[in-house]
Image (cartoon, rainbow, N blue to C red):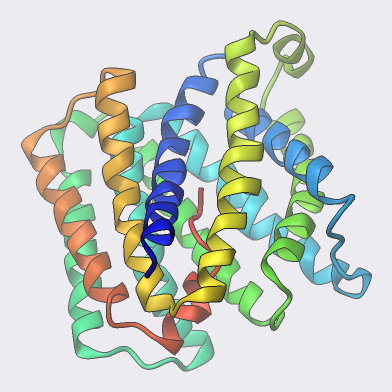
Length: 294
């Protein structure tokens, strides 16, 4: 890879990794589902004028948005609200083994021995994290994050069945449907939405801008450019920097701390994901080309 593209790949991983940190800070004011609704509203408003999803796929995009965005982000970020962002970033790595397992069950993809071992290592790491006494009173939030990772993997299988729609058309379509779905979910499960919007500070709106424009529109734009120029196996390993960025961001910006058990479990989860991703080729495109779940 060209040095500039290596730097861009690292930048994308860092932008996505900081997403948990920014979202955690944003949830100090906005409730989790409302924050995601505002995020996708901003993304849709910026993209829909330039890149419009095919009307013939609106039905499929509606269900994909419901599963891979509305449900997934509601689970993930309600989970992030109750545990450290750094811990959540480690648990969300289970989206990769979940995706591989679902691709095997639904699409008939073959799982190589090293990948099977990687799945076991990743889940073993997650079990260590869940067993941390620090999370004893917050397990429901940890399982929400894991549920979000599984839901994201389900969404990627649904996306694969669409065929080659194109990255920006997909993002535009998902944002178009996810925004109202998330607003409805927020009004059903959350309260005081209008008060939150009216009283939001510049910092709170800055979190919305980061999530909607920088993390979604800009980072995905760079990501799809890299995927267009290089093999998936050249690009995807850079995403292993994502949880590292989240952990460091949680420590330095949110004052979070890690126990030895979480560090060991997180390291195993990352190693397991590395064992799965580094040697994947055509299989990897099925469930990972659409980037991170955040």
